[in-house]
Image 1 (spheres, helix red, strand yellow):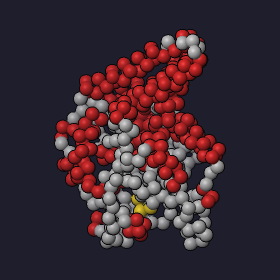
Image 2 (cartoon, helix red, strand yellow):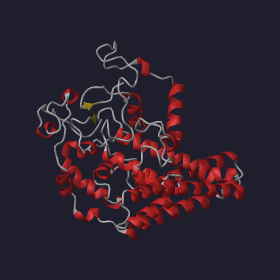
Image 3 (cartoon, helix red, strand yellow):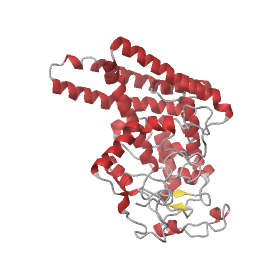
Length: 398
């Protein structure tokens, strides 16, 4: 269960009325969900000022930290094929792929931090380091930085968010609530066979991230005939002034692809697949799993414009720990994600302390979930199918 407690919200809330005289918060009342009224200043004042300080050299030490572990793992793996036992070789390669995927996710997090200008006080250093780190991991740095910024600005909003926006009843092709024989559900039509479930999960974890970058799969719907892609500088994700930044990002990706092609010619395709390709799949797995569970929970709603504002939307983010080992190598992106969404320029090495103070300021509105990750994923996967077309506070149903 979600660890925050919730209270019944009165329908006439002063701050809500500023945006809409009669917001529809019937689902919030039914679920006992209280809509927060704190301001960004109140939350900001609760966090010590030193938590916002960015230290370039200290940040670079984490790049060195990750580079050392990437190198150690790759060097160690270079001896695996000398092991005479086939089963032992398979086991050792599997360990390498899992561990290198975890470390690679940490490298990606540092690039992501650059995109938020949280790595250094220097914008030039942020963008230079971020471009290199993300290009190494086949992520278009500026392209994703721009769309991700929009995600932060619209988190939890049914109309403004860029990713993991719930599908409504009508978009699922379901009858209206009044005419639905199964009412609020559960709906048998959403039940999948084990084979279909495994296929959907495989597609999401292996192909979800590259498909999102290439074709905006799972992203916000744009009413456009143009190719919506992080690789297309003229698509609706970007403004005209983003053209050269997106082009630079595509150049970084092409350079990395060219380098991998060079390695394939000189070292062999299977060598590149074993040392880089399969860990890259594990990186995709972590990216999709972490972001999905940050923003998808059967007990956490989304807001429409009558209720939504920045701090309310950001407060719908859910902190989760993946254990000390993974949290460390992922630079605490998962267990401090609430503070990251509210104050994205806080560097990761101050995020745990900032979270400690932010939890006090947010009180019952701070969201965290200690459910074991496989169970948490299964709960969200099986219970988060659609939301109603009406209402300013909408919860997932199935």
